[in-house]
Length: 115
Length: 112
Image (tube, rainbow over all chains, first blue to last red; front, side, top):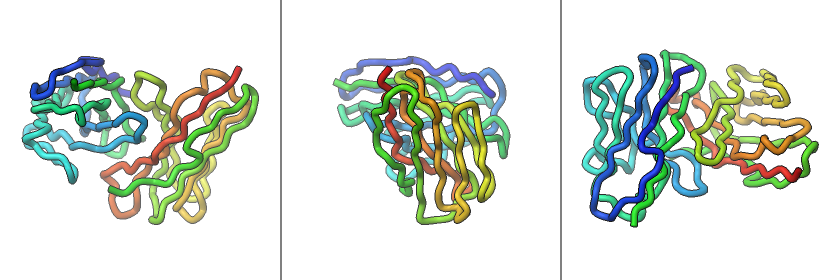
């Protein structure tokens, strides 16, 4: 399966600032996703990162708050903009290597605390 | 959005005991997946199930795809301390094969 490197692994940020999270995969993948996992909760899909076009956002998530880039088939970034304490969560990058591949592979996540 | 009903929410057991957890849905699913998440890590896929009635094992783990296609269970036999973590069910329902739907997780603690 694909190996995912996600950076940073954790950060503490001031409210009102922005943080960009990077997801690097060791091989080309068809699908890349960004998830949020709030403390003690399950995973919530933020958006699907599309290579060369705008990301597809899930209900409740907007591009102005969570801009996403995917310049190629191995890399994506998620920015959490104008942060507030409610944005404190684990943010996870996930990939599906090939269409129809078994399940998704996850990065180790970025633990974000906003103070 | 839609979520799966996963139970129990948490379990605290003695080493060596068997564990069982399950997931149910109000709609039909095409695929069931079971993941484990350890602290500070992302979820790792344990078992994938593709058809009704399918029973699949991975070491001490066994999972089944329910006949009705609306449920799945995961069993862990002879638990050991490294089984500690949060177990999530997830799946694709028949109406949307592109979006993975998640359970709320079962937190497992094992007393050595």
